[in-house]
Picture: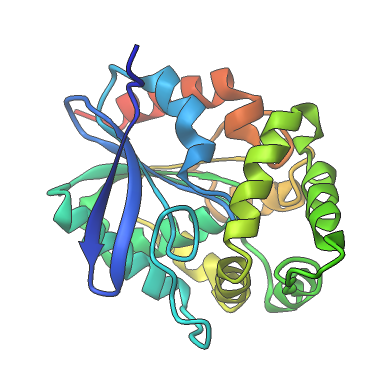
Length: 267
């Protein structure tokens, strides 16, 4: 049987964006992944939501099948958001439900800031309302470069990194995520730099669309969920599990929350 998830490329001003999609009617949902994953991290949720609406998972530049920004470039969150806006234009998506995970949450918030009239709702798993000092501290732990070495020791380092983030619940999940991480060996450095330079809080507080937020209790950003709630008490909170891999490890709950929220935000 053919997979319901199809793949495609579209052009933006800087290169090609790779995406996965499921056909459907109504207001589409667009999913943005964390560092250093790809759109594959949303596939289980997309299969669970199939038949409800059109669904798209975009690979961020530097990840998955999308183009690589030059190695000497330092893309900002605004650059990633503008490239994705061009992608939406190429796909003729005028209005959408937007969902982002970790880095994807930052890009989603900026995209919604740039084009508020196009966003029917925004859902954020692992929102990032960090102070400037906290962003500096996070930068010491996430985004340090690695390079291949002849001994292959970096392979085990990456495996352990993912296992410690919570992917140990499924060895095949570590395998997939490690493949994505090795491909994005420099894209992850660029995207994390962008995250730590981004004032998520200011953009998040100013959002004008309906908001849903959540983080598993063992997500690295779970400690900041209460802050995100206090900043936007109007936000709907989604109870989910799954460490830093909620769409894979708690697919049923994530899909259920998305389906209910998307429907509630439509006429």
